[in-house]
Length: 164
Image 1 (cartoon, one colour):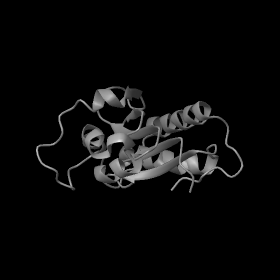
Image 2 (image 1 turned 60 degrees about the horizontal axis):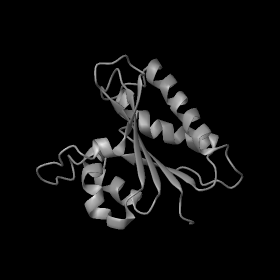
Image 3 (image 1 turned 30 degrees about the horizontal axis):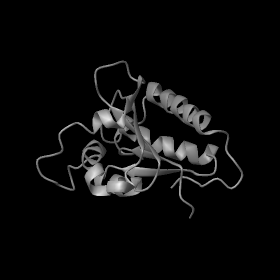
Image 4 (image 1 turned 180 degrees about the vertical axis):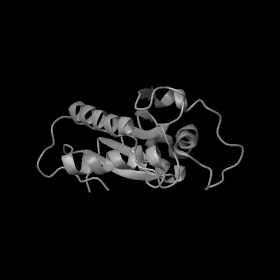
């Protein structure tokens, strides 16, 4: 497979309501299409997997749900270098190592293979209960983010890489 110029990683848990925002976005992008050179993957909840997927990709966009107290469906865009300054976890526990931890350790782990640009797109969630559905506000916000990413990278081209 040719080297991607950009990678969208949807993080979260499909079984926990609005925490499914990232994987749902990846699914929708897969149906709508992305241009050649732009890939997307479901990063699930595993931070170490996120680190490895970022290797040698010039631009990475991580999409996840958040809970800050803002209005559900609010979209935040944060430069990855701001999040990378958060302290890494005291110990590496594969069950508690999230993508935000991955951003903190990725420069050391990837060295020259670290992306030149990392952005986190966060969607404020309303419910994260096991078995809950997406809230209407988050469902709408996912479509807004999907269309913004498609516009950012250009219209889908024939033969563009599918999302996984």
